[in-house]
Every structure is written in structure tokens, then in C-alpha cells.
Amino acid sequence: MKRIYATTIALAAALAPALIAAPAHADPLSQTGQNQLVDRVIQRALSQRGVPFVYGGGDVNGPTNSARARAATTRSALTDITGRAILPSTQGNPPVPGSVTPGLPGTSLVPSEDMPDTTTVGFDASGLIQYAFAGAGIKMPRTSGEQCSVGQKVPPAQARPGDLLCYGPGGTQSVALYLGNNQMIEGTSPAVSVSPARTSNMVPYLTRVLSS
Image 1: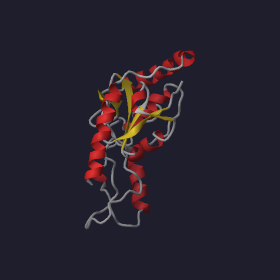
Image 2: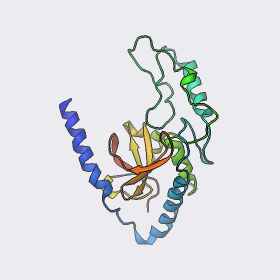
Image 3: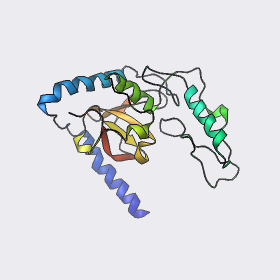
């Protein structure tokens, strides 16, 4: 355990200055076209600052309510035969169907009152990414884990605006859009916001969907 903890600290220390480093230069022959697409993605994401966070919220057309997330949880509840609690994600994505909490006595399926109301429209982390990339004509998968599995994996030292920062195993907990200058935008509680790029719990690579 001590070795794992020390490794985590060392990795975070290595990633922090790398994210601040100047972006690597694209090939000049294709840089203009790629930059235009990246700008569209970033501006589309920035246009949603302040939009509320909603589990399961957002798609290619904009913010939505939590009906999709509620439906997914209901389906999981009906098919889960273990009788153990379904875990909602904690970092900006809808509950993961089939996820359970093993070994906890007295747990039960997540009650409906714990789900977000269906009157508020907004984004979760992956919903915002899907909406942003649709501005460049790119149809992204809907979950953060799927989004972090596409494109090119690049080291943080080569971070460019438009790259994805992924959190949790395989990016399954959350995903954010890197803006450059050590800033990112994320669909997180309480609302879509810009913040310093964080390295805590980040996977050791960035995902580049638009590459030159």
C-alpha cells in the first residue's frame, strides 16, 4: 500500500508541470484546419458555462433532463439479481448500469428519490463532451469511458487544447476538455465550469480526438 501511495504522489507531481507546459506544435501543413475544428469544439463547450449539472444530461443537441439516466437506472434495477446496491458515479457521469456494492449488509437498490429531478436540464461530464465535439461534426460515444477509449493517447507533456483529460479507471469516472494554459472545462456539480486542470485521479495520458 505504501508503494502504491508513493507512486500516485510521484505521478501527480510529474503530471502537474507537464499540463502547464506549452503545447506541442502541429504539423504546419494541417495546423490551420485542425485549429479551426478545435476552436469550434472549445467554443461550443465554453458556451455552456453555468448550465446545471444533471446526471445523464446532454447530447449532441444540447442540455437535456435526467430522463435517460433514470431509465438506465430503472433497467439496471430490473435486471440486477444480486439484491445489492447500484452505485452512481461520483465524478460527473450517470450511474453505471450493473455496478454494485458487494458485501454491504442492508443495502438496496438506489431509490428513485435519490435520482435527479426531470425538470432541470443540463449536462454531465460526457454529455458536455459529446455536445462540444458535435460542433466539429464528430459523433462521440456517450460515456466518459468510451470517449477516453477513442482517438490517440498522448503524454501530458504534449497536451494541446481540445485534448480530453480522463479520470478514474479507463476514464470511467469523469472526462474534461483541456483548454490550454492549464485550464479545463467540465460538466460537473453544480454547473459546467472552467477550472485549473487537475491531476488527482487522472489517467496517465490524454486522449486526442482531433489530431493533425
